[in-house]
Length: 303
Image (cartoon, rainbow, N blue to C red; front, side, top):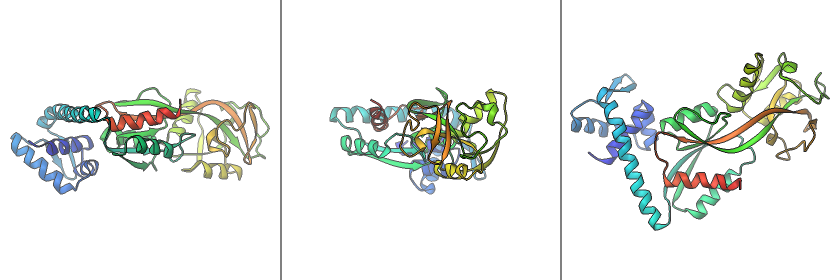
């Protein structure tokens, strides 16, 4: 039994797909398929039930998976122990990032990691489908770490580390009926057409949860994938919306201590909603020294 066979088995088991498992392992699918077939011959049992293009673990595969994870954890611990003696960390970290990172300086994090640990390679992947997809990718192993917009303190099979918190402003066009108001309740705006992000994006989930908790519905008429586009459409009177403060020119706290005011061509009102960015990593496996180095570089920004 070879280590690569165990690595490929775990990758396919977590993705439940030979194609996605090969992508996560960084090798061609034919190599993964051949290695797993050889492993099955050595184990004397089929590890997967093949169902066309999809697969599921067989009873033998289910029995092997926790042991295989233990093997990989032990190998990584051995590598980290040697790296600790050498005073370094190495390896590749697949890092998912958001389209908008608040006031977090992602390039600064990468520069810090490269300066302290030149043998660490960080591969960035910017999400175009939102936090829900990024969390799934962390669970499957497609991503090692991911910046996610999650309000909760925990998520299934995920460890979350808070990185950034941003106030959320209600915004509308200057000529809107609510422009000039100093306070806004969710009931005040429930009947308005909204400009918002697609379902699965963290900031959308935060707002949806607030309306649901208040027993209110709302209609999202236009979906966008950048805060800049959202503000442009709201400015043109095509709807109202909720936007983090850091999305405005000037960075954090653009309204200073004011509760409301005109800002970048829209009327903005403070709300009690908070947009949070957290760093997600799998709770099912031990983090590598390289992943820990990236996490610490993010945390150092807030000190």
